[in-house]
Image 1 (cartoon, one colour):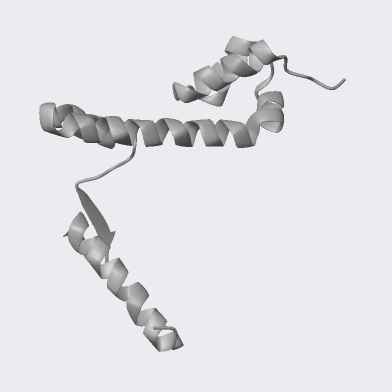
Image 2: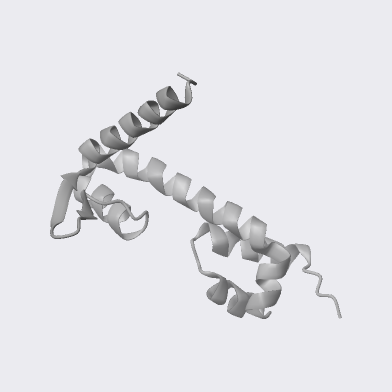
Length: 119
């Protein structure tokens, strides 16, 4: 038997996804199995969760002047942002500041393009 979500259910699924509820919570609230929810709304859920993260980044940008601690909290706990990136070598752990790591990654990309003759 095929499951068809009515407009009211879809609006509730969208609302919960935009609040960053996980699929288990959404499925329980709507009253369907998690697999059914993922099968019928998987792409939409991913889109709504991405929209939540974008909105959160915008909010984080607004909070950085008035409440920098809140901006850091949101970034670290919800968006997965970090202050430092740890790289493991064969014998030791090296901590590289994030800005330096991004610059190194960008330099590697440019170097690879030059080797390939595309730059």
